[in-house]
Image 1 (cartoon, one colour):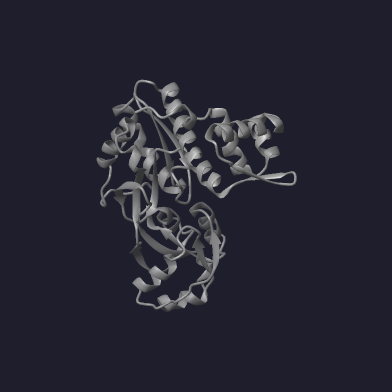
Image 2 (cartoon, rainbow, N blue to C red):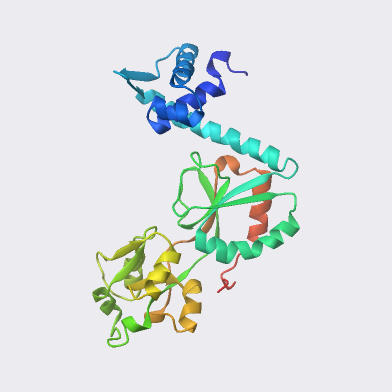
Length: 302
C-alpha cells in the first residue's frame, strides 16, 4: 500500500533537516548544502507544513530541533545513506554491484588485501571498495555494507562470520630489558606498558593467562598497531602485539620477547554485516568466497 504523499517529504527538505541536526546551526547547514540560510529555513518550514508538526525550536536567533525531530533526523540520515549507497552501486557497477567494506588497517592490509586478487579473478563483476575504521560503528550512520572487526561481533542488528582468532605476545626493544630481564610475568607490571585504545582489557587478559591477578593495568594508550609498534621499537615500553605483526621484528632482533609465549586473545576477527544486507548479491558473493579463505592453521603474512 502506497503511503500518503504528506509522509514523503522532498529530498531537499530532508537533507536540510539532517544537516541542521548534524551541524547544529542553520549557518553551518547552509554552508554544507551550498545554500543560503533563508533557503534552509524555507526547506524546514516546508517540511513542517507538509508533516503538520513542529520540528524546530527558536531561541532568539538560534534554532534547534525538537527531541522528536532529533530522532526523526537520525532515521532520515540512515535512509539518505541507504539511498546514496544504492545510487553508488548502480552507477559504479550496475551489473555485478559494489560492496563497501570497512576494514581494520593492520589486519586488512596483512590478511585480506593479499587474498583479494583471487576474489577479483573469481568475481570480476563485483566492485569492492575498502575504507579503514578502527572502532565499531553504527551501520546506519556509515555507508558500509559490511565490516571486518575484532571482538565478539555483538553489534545490535547485525550478523557475523568468524574469520580467525589471534595470539598476542609481549614485546619491547631489546635495550629495555638488557640489564634487568623480567624474572616473572608479574615483573612486567613494574615496566611501562603500552595499550591499544580499542582493546582496553588486553593486558589484564594477558596477565590472567599467565596466572597473574593484575587488577587495573595502567600505561600509555595508542590508537593503532602501527604506532604502538614504532613506540616499542624506540624503547618507550612493552607492547602486546599480535604474533603475526611482531614476528618479523623479533626475528630481526629489533624487538625482544619481554615474557612468555604467544597467548590467545579473547575475541576473534569477524566479518559483520547489518541484517538488512543479508540478501545483498555482492555481499553474498564476498561472504561465500571469504568462507573459503579462513582457517586457524592459515599463516598470516609476516
